[in-house]
View 1 (cartoon, rainbow, N blue to C red):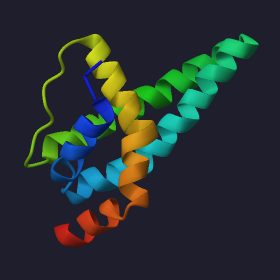
View 2 (view 1 turned 45 degrees about the vertical axis):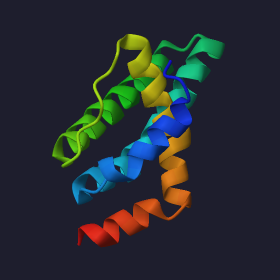
View 3 (view 1 turned 30 degrees about the vertical axis):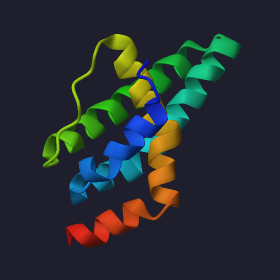
Length: 115
């Protein structure tokens, strides 16, 4: 995991999230990722294959949609150092950085500035 991942990601977050479609994709798919995570956890606890498949499908949908959004941004994301860097950055974005971006007013400011 990157040193000071939270600070590192936050410092780069607003400049990398200015495109309206990317903002829209994130505001829709981050909650889907949360639901997918809940389903995967439920699948682990209950042994439900259906919940596992559904949860993983939601993870994949969020990942692909957000990747498409990031591809539209003028400022591209920093390349991943490997699989662990990818997983840690993606989970931190979903559960900490994006909610912080929304709650701090960053998402709304970016949305208005993109108009």
